[in-house]
Length: 332
Image 1 (cartoon, one colour):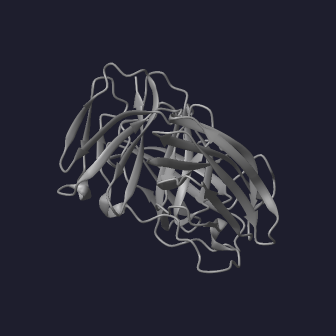
Image 2: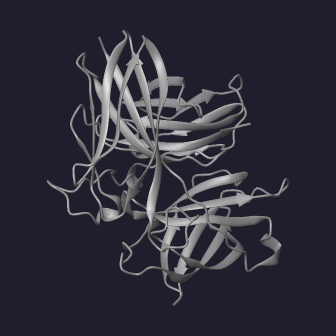
């Protein structure tokens, strides 16, 4: 019997700022913060209210108050339609002791050919939950398991902090098939360590876990290393003093980034494997409920026919023996 579990840890956040350029009044920046599990990545949540302008092939750049470029997005989106999540690479990790800083955001289009919009704003890099006023605060998360098994089985899940206090503890029995199980919500405190374990007497096969948002109409996720049934260490922003080595959680996929186009897509989605070319790569497409709608093994560029797939937000996953990469795809 083979059972597969995928654990999703979802992050909530919101933010408000106003564009300095009046012609970009339809585009707002709703959130900017460091990924709590990858200090080299900045997460930007934008919203485009325009029904006519999508800002084709957008790219964001963030400068500090001195005008030094500190973060830049690798262009991988066709445009900005309503909500969008952008991953910016930080050239150097930010100082955790600095609560906030004044910065300037630039929105470029056409693969950084045209500067469209400029935003002056105060960035709170460690404030994941923008509903609070504190510069740090907790990280609200929702936990979801994606379970696939050819037979029914039971599994136990527990989340404890460094003081051995139980944050979450549940038991589930799953029938044969594929399911997405929402386990509930909790809050991870910064400068605290958490230990997550999943066990099953019948064996779980493999476990992958990721961090994703829980904003409505938005999907963005990070897939972590496969860990079997071992205990997972979660150390937000790497600030906790934990037993054992710190969890690196996510690899740097810059050299493996694939080109996915067009995005949004209505007929054929082209997947250029980029750094994965020549490597046996499993390509999967998941809908917003984590249901698998496409799977194929490839070692070169391939095309996915999505003309019969329902409109909505999807996650495209590329996985090899050593790496896993996910990108958001919009089917319209």
